[in-house]
Amino acid sequence: ERAFLSSRSFVRFGTLRGITTALPVMAAISLSSAALKPSVASLRGRRTVRRARAVATRAVISPGSAPSPDALYESADRGAKQISATGASLADWSPSSWRAREALQQPTYEDADELENALAEIANRPPLVFAGEARSLQAQLANAAAGNAFVLFGGDCAESFKEFNANGVRDTYRVLLQMSIVLMYGAGVPVVKLGRMAGQFAKPRSEDFETIDGVSLPSYRGDNINSCEFTPEARRPDPSRLLKAYDQSCSTLNLLRAFSNGGYASMQRVSKWNLDFMEDRERGREYRELAARVDAAINFMKACGIDEDKPPMLSTDFFTAHEALHLGYEENLTRLDSTTEEFYGCSAHFLWCGERTRQPEGAHMEYFRGISNPIGIKISDKSDGESVVSLIKTLNPENVPGRITLISRMGAEKLREHLPRLIEAVTDAELNVLWVTDPMHGNTVKTENGFKTRPFERVRDEVMAFFEVHEAMGTHPGGVHLEMTGQDVTECTGGTAEVTEGDLEKRYLTHCDPRLNASQALELAFLMSNKLADMKKRAASAGVAR
Image (tube, rainbow, N blue to C red; front, top):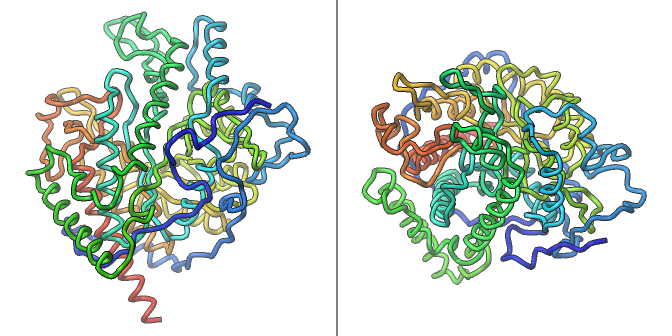
């Protein structure tokens, strides 16, 4: 066996024993938001509201007896273990068994030996994350699926080599902290924070080639594969970029770990998280008012003799997530956890697959089947309930809570029409899933001046529709998945920032799809907080009436 780096080699990042602690909420606040009338009468008329089922938490997602830290190693002898933590058969599975299946969205490299050398180097490097952290996340996701927490995914559409710097990582992290405080304080639930960071490089493409002025070159697939400049050399898939992506991911994780546990995320600093360019804006002022209330609550706790220097007040759990698209990279960062003898994808805590790569017999699903990480599946209005249920059962045969997250991406109108039937199919099959909305990808439009953008109002409407559908169905809207940044960009129109189509050319920095800027992201957090608080009040009133 070959021992790898243990989690003590970094600042603590997440809780290895799956224990979560939420800040006590001293009072609820009323947050202003746009008046949106729910259109769920038809749902209420044909559906009986379902009560949430209690789910039994398996030991795999609450590893209280596991030694800490986890030692991760590779071993040719895996003993008699033939079943994964999720119940999947491992008799014919290995981290490389996906190679016998059709693998979509993979780049074509000119030099196979160059690729294998790069992948071999990655296999010899330490894992980026650790199995115990992934189990801790899974426990928190199970808590959210039961309606006892809310999940916030946020970060770049695609990370960039050129734009990478410590301030950029810090600012996106800081906005996510702000959003989580708004949601936690206003809605009264813990917030599970996941960054589309430290690995979100590769992007699926509709076409293998891009043609401009009669010249065809390989499509840009993300900085870990090729470069966005339209030249033959830039568009050549380059295996050395995988190593650079690993190095940048490692640097990003070091920053995130330090921010999360080195004092930056302390609740005593909540008033200092505002970005400089947000100070004089409406959402910046609104956040300062909220921060003052949090400070007052902490002072009250201190006056009552409650120790504000406990770890939950000084640090936070923060996890990483990305689309597991490049299977060679994922395979060579897969490790066997010595404490559970389970395989984990150690490129991120949470991995997801998109609609282009979730074919039941495809290579991506074969890889996902054997790893024990919590995983996400993107679904759209084109998804049918039977195939979604079948895929969930394949990836989670023992129905382990927190294992599966369904991420809907439809657009508001299509979501109201199609999400109820998917919820019904999954609920009728009695499957444990976490429901999350991605309000970005179903709302992309192209302006007359050639920019891809996403109107903030359409993003907002899809989030509100997601909440309203779940409330009508008696299920839990578990989280939101956003493409956003801490930078003051002009990529999505609308919001109180009043970004117009004419403003897009001013600070349009994305390498791929448009992102919410800090002001728009924070505005959405206030709207979600208000909505969740209202839903909680209605549920409490209904409980009293019964």
